[in-house]
Length: 186
Image (cartoon, rainbow, N blue to C red):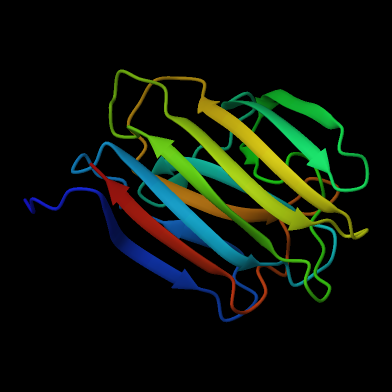
């Protein structure tokens, strides 16, 4: 085992266009205490999509009803008034806090997702994030959120996906040049 301390780059994914998911399969190992995924320039091919996350094992992601609890606060650039969003019956969690992302010029999402101790079988996998993006309106939105897997278990994999406004899987995926960087932290 390496003695690297601090933030270690484990994987980078840059989309070429129309990827339905961005997966980090079995990379959340017990070699690290937590993980951070920085994402830049993230946009859907099709306008009005939610950025959504899930954990799992291998290439299987937990997506059952009530698999996650989520709570977030968002501030809309037009109001400066925070509003809350929560969901305890979720099949994943919204990194965009229930707001739809746009795909117009400059309507890109940026942020960081932190995943705490995902390989401890006796604990719930807990995550928190900051996302800044323009909605499809466009309105600048700042989101601070958290989510937890509702049952204890090791979850060495993470998936970013997009949902349409009807909460179905997006058929067109991520636009080209969406960048995701996974870091392990000791």
